[in-house]
Each structure stands twice: as structure tokens, then as C-alpha cells.
Length: 317
Picture 1: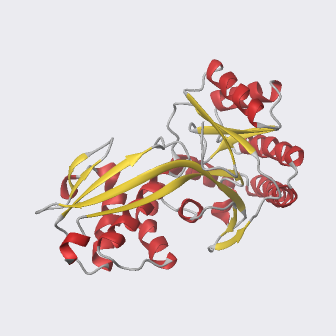
Picture 2 (picture 1 turned 180 degrees about the vertical axis):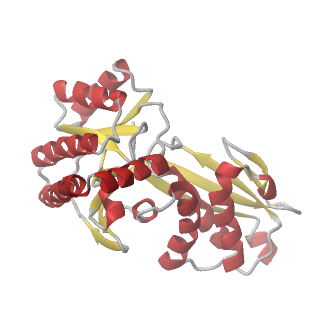
Picture 3 (picture 1 turned 90 degrees about the vertical axis):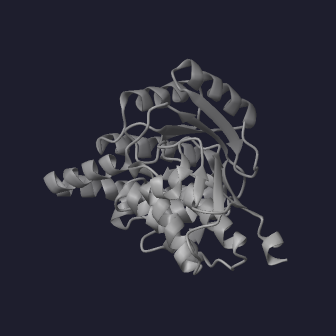
């Protein structure tokens, strides 16, 4: 009977957007993240012999996973060890709506979905502490020295104010916000971007610390805007944050162009999201119809894909 129960198990997680506070969150300052309803799902089925994996980027044995996937491999092995199970007997199928390397939390969401599925397969309860510890194995490999915000953001359904070490506050918005997300088509490099900011701090500590203090002020202003449902204030703070990220040299010409294009088209605010140096940008609009127009504008201006959604909905267009 137990074998019949364990023939199949599922786990999933959504992506995330860093609304404000990229990079400074690595240095113990606050940042705000919100869910994006693009999901990664993991399905586990009985399969005799070695563990095998299938996904859009790799299909084969767990033991043969390529070096770039070491993080998720370590996560799977660590999860089996935590469950006191031998590394055998299952196939893991991962499907994703999230583009990789775009700052949308794909590595954390993949690990979260897989850990949840494995625990369900073995009919074990999963605590937040266990989840974060196991997902951290994947995140450390993917990002070098992760802040931890991604794995917290993809595991929950609310906007969060995050500050190391794992200080998390939920931010219930007074009203929904209309977001647009555009993928430049260029993969970002979190490790490279984080290392670049670290070098800037070493070269000009007082200048960079001032910029980071200013970003912290932006984050706290954004917290107020969310709690009060003030779209105009939040939009202006997004744009200010983007200007500060440009000063940290983590933006690029296409991200800047897309931000400028949507501001000139009536967006309330816009900025890059995530580590930068490629990846995605976000825009805030006054309503759904404007979000649709901004999405179309972004495609015309060079974005590869654009989505829009309301923060009170699980639907994305």
C-alpha cells in the first residue's frame, strides 16, 4: 500500500521580483521582494535504479549532471540524506515557466519545488528551516554568497521586507499593484555583479556606502508606499532605485533603454530587477490596460518577452 501511495508526488514554487534593494541586501540592508506568478514544478515518479532527471536544460542521470547544475544536484543529494533515503529509485521531472539567469529566482524556485516534491514522495513533513537549509545548498553554488532573499521569496505568497540574517516581515498591500516584467533576453551573472559591487566598495568605500544608505531609504519609502497603496510614490521610488543601481554599475544599455522607454510611455516607475548586467526589468503602471500597452511597447523597444499581472492575482499575461 505504501508503494502505491508513493508512485507520484509533486512540488512547485513561483518566481520572485526584487522590487527594491538589490545588492544592498547582501550587506545586511533591507530589500523588498514580491511574487511573480510564473512557476516551476517538480514531479517525482517511481523509477528503479539510479536517480534520473529531466528538464529543459538537462536529461539524464543525477550522477552525470554537468558542472553548472552542481547546486541542484547537491540539493537533491542533501534532501535524500535528510530524509534518510538511499540515492535511488526515482525520476525527477522539472518543468519551468521561468527563464533562467534573469533575476527571477529560477534557481531558488527549482530547488524549492524539488525539495517539496521529494518530501511529499517520502511522506515526510517539511519545516521552513529544513527547506531553507536545503535550498541554500543550491543557492550558494548559484550565487556564491546569496543574501537568502530568493529562497524566502519563492517559498511564500506575500510581498516581504527581507534583511539578513533572515529577518522577514510580510507587507500586506493596501491595494493591488499592476506590474510589467520584461526579459532582455540577456542572461545576467549574479556572481559577477556581486563581485563588481564588492570591488567598488573596496575602491571607494565612502561613496558606495552613501549610495547604499540612499537605497536603504528608498526601500523604507517603498515599504510605506506598499502598506498605504500609494502607486505614485512607489513608482517614483522604483526609478530612483534604478538610478542608484546605475551608479553601482550593474545596469546595461538595454536595461536603461527599456526603463527610459516605459517612463516616456506613461509608466509610474521602472527599474532593473535582480543582480543586473542583463536579465529583466520591471515597470509599475496605474491599471491593467496601461500594463498591456507598456508590455507591447517593451517588445517594440527590444525586449524578448514581456508579462504583466496584478499583485492580487495568480494570473499572468
